[in-house]
Length: 267
Length: 296
Image 1: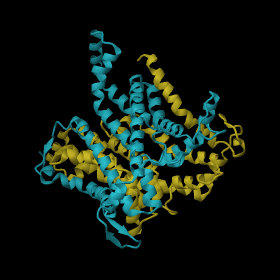
Image 2: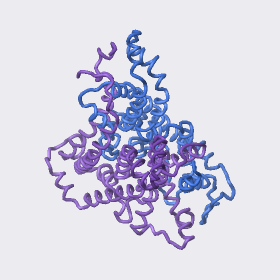
Image 3: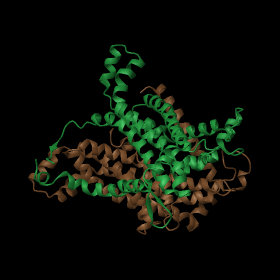
Image 4: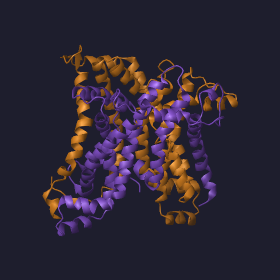
């Protein structure tokens, strides 16, 4: 296509990358370098900030905790979403459209509304400050997300496959495991990716539902960042570590990004 | 129709997901409604107070102001990001390595933890060291975070940086799927760029734009983390949005009843706005071909 067209997207991409680049350079600076002036290149690049984070349990456990609850969340979300997406794709039942749209509205639910009840509920059943509490709380947006994405993928699988499976005498479980799941492997990867990411980047609930044992890196960043003489370079390094999973996963599913962001509505 | 679909109802497939969603989506709402109708003096003692909290919320100016601020912010976000996203998507090369690289790079802000976005932009506006502050100073402009106009501008710029990529991605993916004969026909009719956009591209963007507008509207209407870090709701209360107000009331002042009533009102607003999108999204979704009819 005409290269003239690419100027606008390239300029936009460049502008978008500037703050990310700056965050990266900031993370490579020592505290002493940053006295009072803007630096576009670190004068004495150092990995000290990263070493600090990766050597202090107070810091690195934030990432471990986030990884744990995100993983639990992805497992729950995908497991319950596959059969539900199958039902939405293959059956027409009363309230089909309304329920399907209702899922989207749950995805739009405001975390601030759910916050106080979640804190109360999880305190009452003694699950506050556990990975499970956060993983479960995040399900209100990851499960609808996974169902919408997977519904799109399952609808692309011809119904004839279901029919021939029935003739061949497959059980429901056997059909799912040996026929459907391999067909929608990409869809499951995309759904898992988006559940992972949206759980990973969430802050309000994951911070409020944890105190020490399951505190994610975001909560640790606020603790460090809220003091007057906050170490901006250290925070930048913590930020870079928070961005890395997104970069890796964006590269690995680059051809399906639009599909996931549109909740499976465009291929 | 095959055997296992005849014998099983779709509800069995839906059950696990709906159980989870009932617990994490609807139960908290029931709690919120309960709080909004009761008063508590600590412990687990709740006293029925009827509509007292609703009266208090609906006569509180700070609630209305927060609603208006959130609405204005969300509308500004749409006005800026939707046209910008469309323009960028229209100019994207259809395929190739460059396109893939652009797509990955513009996704990065979206996939950045919100708390990191907050601290990054807080650092960007620090006098003396901040990239944005110093760049503006370089062209003779002083960024003044004590001015509501500047704080709004910074938040809007931050959100545009954070989320415009989403609009671009959705529109780009849909545009790419338009078969080239449409463009060839337009070329034969010597249609101009605007006509091609208006009669070929825009109608096909309707569904993705509805989704993009809904997602962008809701996420900016309910924004919490970034203003919480960057402005703390200030100067004054100029960037205290609805979520901020609610979290303050519920978690900091621990005023459960008032927070409950506020949350119910907030929920109704969200419900009302999403409802507007129902007709835009549902019929267009391609629910046309029911593959298997279930008698429920």
